[in-house]
Length: 117
Image 1 (cartoon, rainbow, N blue to C red):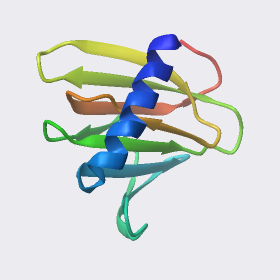
Image 2: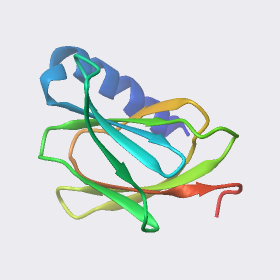
Image 3: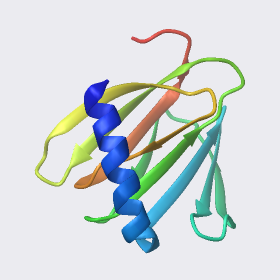
């Protein structure tokens, strides 16, 4: 948890400096909205039909995840870094924002579940 908080704080500082490289995804149940971070304009809408929704990032980009399920749920999020390291996190998904740390090139967001698996 401390590692997540540290990454979030560092990401927020990074976003203030380089917000043009920030991508945003808004998850509501099975619907995923992609939107522009600066203008809040919806770029696209998709439905999560597979177990994981994949988001590819360029090196140096930051992803803002807005997880907004109706009830308190958890989502398994897998982060793949540029050096091949893979980390798994279980994030609460009732109206919470998360930012990826630097170096992430792929994010996989799972469906909402009641318990941490």
